[in-house]
Image: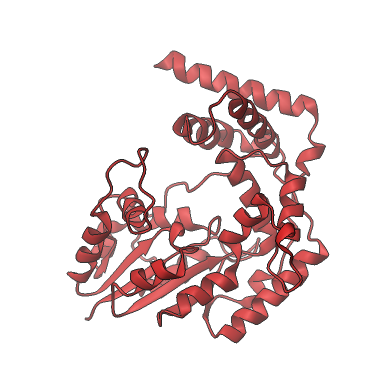
Length: 340
C-alpha cells in the first residue's frame, strides 16, 4: 500500500474542529480501511504539535516525546495517516521544514473559508481566548495590516498581526510548498451548500468516503453577538484584576463560552458583517496569487468570494440584550457550582 501522511494544518475557524471530531469519532472504522488517525484522542495530536513547535509550558505539562511517538506510529503504518492541528499552519519555515521532512509522502491540506466570514468568526474566537479588542478595532486592524506592497510597519497592530498570522493564506501555502510537499487548498463551501460537502471533500483527500461513518459530534461552538460583548467586558475586568488569560481558561472558555453562552446562541443575533470593498479586493488578489503559486484545489475558487454575514453589528446590540446575556451567563455559572 505504501506510507502516506495527510497533514491538515488549518486554517483556524474553517471547520477544523468539525473535521477533527469526525476523524476521532470514526477512528476504528477508518483503521479498518487502512487509514490511521494517530493518538488515543485528538489531545494527543495537540500535544505532539505543541512538542515539535516548542510550545510546552507549565500549563501543558510534560509533552516531550509526543511528536516522536506520533511520527513513529505513522511510519509503522502501511497506508494513509491523518494528522490535524491548526497550530501547524503558521509555523516558522524552519519548523515546517523539519515537520514535512518526517515523511516521504506528505499531502498538506489547508481548509480555507471566505475572508468575510473569517473576520466575524475570528473576532469572537479571539474574545473567547481572552482578548478585549472591540469588533470595530479588530476590523480596522485587519484592514490596515493586510499583506500588500504599501503596508507600513506602523499599520500593523497586535490585533492585525494576530489575524493575518493565521489567515494569510498565500504565505501559509508558500511556506509549506517550499518543502516539496503537495499542498492543497480545500475550500469551505458557501452558505446554502449541501451540509456534508466539507466532510466529503476532506475524505476524498484522505482516500475514503463517508459511507459507514458516524456523524461528528458538535465542533468548536461560536457564541452570539450579545454574549461576545459580555465576554469581552469580562476579559477587561479580569485583566484589571491581574487574572489575564490563560488564567482560568477552562472556566472562561470551556464552561462560560463554549457551554453556557453557546447554548443560548439561538436566542441572540449572530455577529453580522457586510462585505466591504477592501475585503473583496484582497480576496480576489489572494486567489490569483494562490493560482500562480500552483497549489492544488479541492472545491471551487468561487467558494472564496466574500459573502455578507447575516446578523448584527455588535455595537448595535442594546444594553438590555447585553444585560440579559450577562444575567444568563451568571445564572449558568451559579447553577454549575450549585450542582457540584
